[in-house]
Length: 445
Image (cartoon, rainbow, N blue to C red; front, side, top):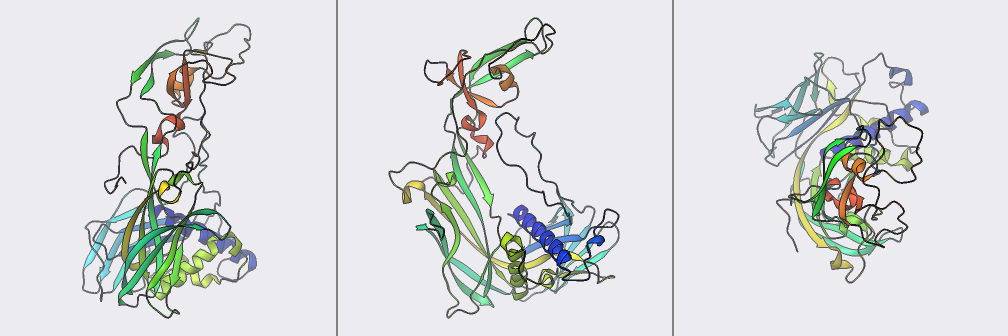
């Protein structure tokens, strides 16, 4: 969940800065300030909770690139793992410590990707205040405003109902009920982790095994191709995805402090993630007024229709400052919250009995092709080849899976036939979409 929040904060802050520069809404951020010869602003992100766990701080540098989204469109002709992914300008070699009002200090050690992990597990306590101190590798010291838990509340129920969205889409709406317990529990932020079951639609219990492959051998490639029994699970997998939006709400101006039927997530019935079995872990954070205002403003900037709104950039100011140079622009937010969570499971048939499942996210079909190919080192006259890539080439690239022996009519319009039928790997190997180990929390039906 942390990874997605980092991405939201970074992209929203970029939009805010670029918009404000173009509209001259603040004098402190002229466009020329962001050039390649000057240091880019530090981004500090942390959500400390009342859960006993290893707490985390994420440190990075502002990146003014707007093309940070990884291309997630599946290409069956590219070997998995070779596509480009996002990069983040992480801040390394920093000293990070959280100090409490009772003189307890919690030190953090740098992990991977800009994450700093507390050396020990701990939980924030009510009626205590905390400050985060950071010393970067260039010797600059930063300190947060005083952090305190505003209050506590309990998620009393999480449930799903068949519903129609505002745009007319039929699907499933997920709601929570909650009740305050202590303190000022009026401002909330919701996040979730959703886990869903994946079943490969064109799966077989056997696989291609290619050995001794020399595509450049003459007069023809040499290889050994076998069909063997699988000794691993790749039919049923599970994938967990964290929420990637900022969802805040308040009961401050309502008649009751209790929360009833607060919408968490809407899933259209054609979304394949609910095809088999679905679970959602909803987390509700009790926020301070200042934190609520920050995330509310950030949410406004993160939505494209709000780029031309009148949200003032001052509301996105970090609650962390440079101890020496208080005019230095520091971005991000350090949060102190109480957390309550609850999990829900449901099946597609619970809401849509006797109806077709949602479509798989890839158009899966069966194919056949010549088993071998012309030697890569062939130097004779050009040879016309109307056939698709050979089976051994595709197996060597790990982009297909075995489905069965060739049968007449199994592959419509097949013109280059071999002894085998295969399918794109994403259709026969669920591991491209998830993990083949059932989560510990998973309950089947």
